Length: 357
Image (cartoon, rainbow, N blue to C red):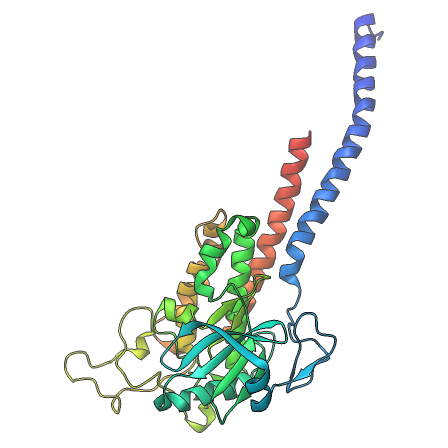
């Protein structure tokens, strides 16, 4: 069968158009590859393990940006002679917190606020010393004679500030579900560390409401979460039958776990002696509420919530023994995070390719 002149002409045109598209497709593929690499680079800082204390620093030493070598924890004499207090930046029942300066470095100096809380103050110091890691604010020194603790300064302050920080223009590029979910992932990783710490199974007791819970953590300038206030971390020793109670006062509200509430209602007046003790599963009850706050209302946050829905239902079981362990929580968070990041990368690449075409 012979092809008409118009058919031959049309075929020739299609061939020329097809050939002319080859360089364009190559360009698009190149741009796509560049876009993908930039996307991965932008998110890679989230995936790296965090170590702010320098791998080479042994226990009892610290390292701050700009220092060539690790430095031993500052003694009473060094704190008194070398640390200059600048201004009060925080006040609680246990501590007064000051911005201070040591050899040109901004640092945080905490002093005992009232002698009746000295046990809490020194408990917090022992926890800081024993839990030094990438999960906890870096200890720089302390003085027991004049109750003082020196720690690394983080200008963004409490994790409660996360919304106001990420809504600032300078951080707006990071106000995404990826960054916010990663903050939640670091929060649950700390709780897992706390439940399996070098100091045994510890419980975050300063967590009777959302604001109080968030105030126990700091947001670093590179947008990571570290624990800061460790004044109330009682020990659970299940093998020895040792459980805990978070304080001696009656707790209220639905933020605390059911087992932290007075179980006798109005039948009996509250008595700490009659209040049953509990364990670290109280921390797990609170995870969904903290994560919900950290995710915020940015695009994609509801997708994360949907993927975590079943796990969070488990965290909210009334019977603590039916709640997942913190290991289960961390593993699920990590699996969901990795899966959604991979999907996001693929969707981003596909969308960029379509736009270029």
